[in-house]
Length: 553
Ligand code: SF4
Ligand code: SF3
Figure 1 (cartoon, rainbow, N blue to C red):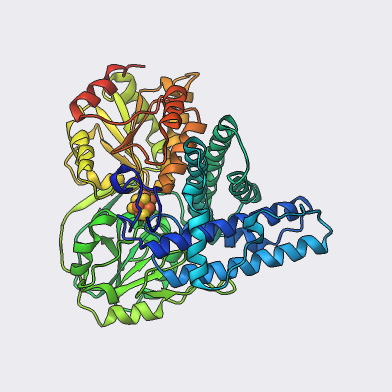
Figure 2: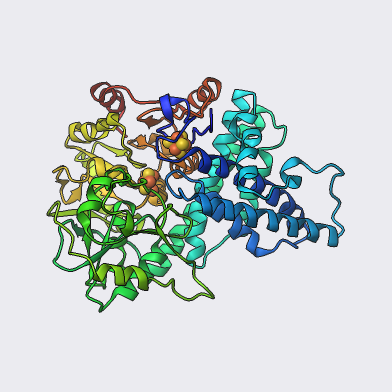
């Protein structure tokens, strides 16, 4: 075994990747990620103590969430970026140690290893992972819960970073993230870890609310929008990932240059925001969910900008490798990395824009339009219509089918499920899971589309707000009395925080697929099943029958 990782839905054999990631992550990168996480725990340990005295430097929060974000599935495959991060992390940890000493903060005589260990070569960094990686926790239930918390915290980190980029932050969220990291090293019992898991979910709701406020206050409330999926005849840049600030900087810098911009995968919802609609050269959405990029990028012809996950490392003979750019927490060996903003100025996208000018226009792979933009404000604007449709029986049930897409064949389930849902049901979605059914001709119910797309995975927050509003309108005591079923597809750690957020809001009976997480031990899976009614999926027909059994208010 040269590595161990089981953080995503594609973990090898449903157990874990041990030689190389199914995602393409090499064992050296996986090990460096483990060591980075280990040092981030050390940083958090010192910073917690400084925070109590209000002496914690603000730069630590960004360093920690950015470091965590870089370890999310498919975000960063660049070995050098991780070794540099570890060097910086060790320096920062040592600075925090000095600050503690200077402030006379009492530290235990024997510092925990994550606060004391030092290394200086890449080899040492990689070797350390063998001692401190996931399997260093022997008890499988404790390991399972610790990792569940860590993956939730990684999701928190991603959303905190997007909000931070738009000038919004919340100290309580940062404090929790760091406290939770340290708590995963402590001798907590199973029930204490379960409590910590639910607390992680509570902060999940907070961070998604924060990001929602950041997005809508900066770019307006998403509006119902038809997005073109065809192409024009200009050279163009494809922008992928979730970061809307990068989107804005790119649109401003490409304006008037003759270079068009297309969104890819999770950037599709950018089209729904009023501020982005004013850019005529934001032409449409190109392609499908992230995992299809290996075929679709060849045909795009222009450069591709990854602002976050999901990157698929290109094959050695791929024709588009030299067209890939990364920025923020994302990274890929061989790709050009665009540096962070300095002093609040825009990122400098001139290199990718010049690159685009040398390229041919994209090849058309699809034509037509897809509809989206139904975040909470737009749905509230349609509330009367929706409530009437529920009351009249025109809408029998809503199905939350948010989450992620992935390459597993069994995900065809979600296309079939959407297709076979009765005509008096509506799908509520967010995240890249929608690509499994957002191009099906599912029609509408009296003008209400049968697929209501709120936006990116973090906009699952909107779906929760909508559910809470419906609960109020129908004067129900329990969110679970609504005619809403949850059939969620998961892939990476942002889906973990979305799931934990829903649990913390009291949502029960969430079905998760296409497989249950490899990191859930049988006992932990049982706790989730017994207390929250979490379940997996079976066959489409069987599941439809089960979900439709209880559907009336
Ligand atoms: Fe395997 Fe997923 Fe980890 Fe990649 S992120 S190494 S596919 S478990
Ligand atoms: Fe998708 Fe990667 Fe999760 Fe943001 S882009 S939902 S998988």
